[in-house]
Amino acid sequence: MIAGPSEQRPSLTDVDGILVGQHTDPRRPTGCTVVTSSQAFTAGVDVRGGAPGTFDLDVLRSENLVEQVHAIFLAGGSAFGLGAAAGVSRCLEERGLGFPVGDLRVPVVCGAILFDLALGDAGIRPDADAGYQACRAAGPEPVAEGNVGAGAGATVGAYAGRDGAMKGGLGSWALSLPGGLQVGALVAVNAIGDIIDPSSGRIIAGARRPDGSGFLGLMPRLREGWTPGGEIRSGTVIAIVATNAALTKSQCNRVAQMAQDALARCINPAHTQWDGDTVFALSTGRLPSRAPADVGIIGALAADVLAAAILRGVRAAESWGPYPSCRDFPAATR
Picture 1 (cartoon, one colour):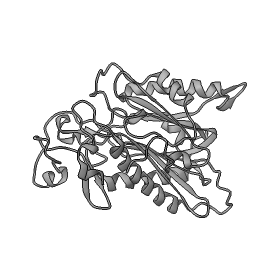
Picture 2 (cartoon, helix red, strand yellow):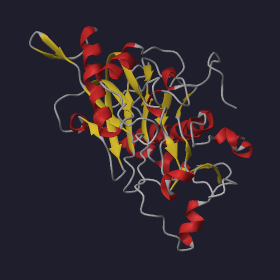
Picture 3 (cartoon, helix red, strand yellow):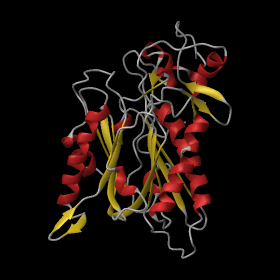
Picture 4 (cartoon, one colour):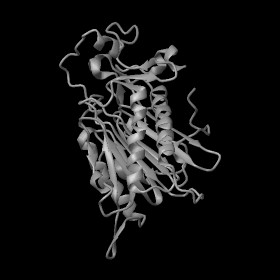
């Protein structure tokens, strides 16, 4: 079941220090989601898709100077959505956050975008104001899910063509261990493949049959020798996992790599040449324990919570225009 907007539920904001803000454009399904904090945090990234759209990822390379960042944004709008970065930076500067450069503070902002231009007026896309509004709205409340923020215009199952695609969305989940370790995830699910529930192996959203009677089943068809048509099939899953453990940049990059396992579990096919699949990992370092962080455990848990967030993103989505949602297929919502 999907929790209502006022219900307390596990969310990325359960990780100590994490704040999330979203802006959803009322004119068409698109938007921006910003993850930030009152203090800088350590971060890493892993990019697996063949068509990524990203902003300032070089800062996350282990050998580079800056050790921490101040915000990560996810946005729709394809490459146009990268313009949201300017608004996020402006908001952070107003709050006095940034890397010290003389008398200035220069906010360090990283981000990634997804393709949602096929829904509504493609001339409407997240811009600097959208980034500013999302950053300004950042707070500790549970993350809204479904057709919101970066997931507002997300779709799934476009591998066989957009006529058979379904609505995707934004999802979040988290867990806390008895010792105080916290791991959370947030994801905008915009995959061209089918979404699979790993617990049952069943498709819960994805490419539909031409008559709309059910799921096409992409992988069985591909094994039969079926070839999709020539239509551009643009997707991209963009996600953030976070922990309160103290990690280095190198360790965050390893956690991001392990978290990508969630896409392999829940999306088939994933990481294609049409996807820009990108996963960020961040560390707030607020776990009281002085014991060294076990990156292998944190990475494994990050993949688990990201898998749960992927399923929640599609189950929370609502239909839009020609794109039905998971809720329109009752058996898939269980």
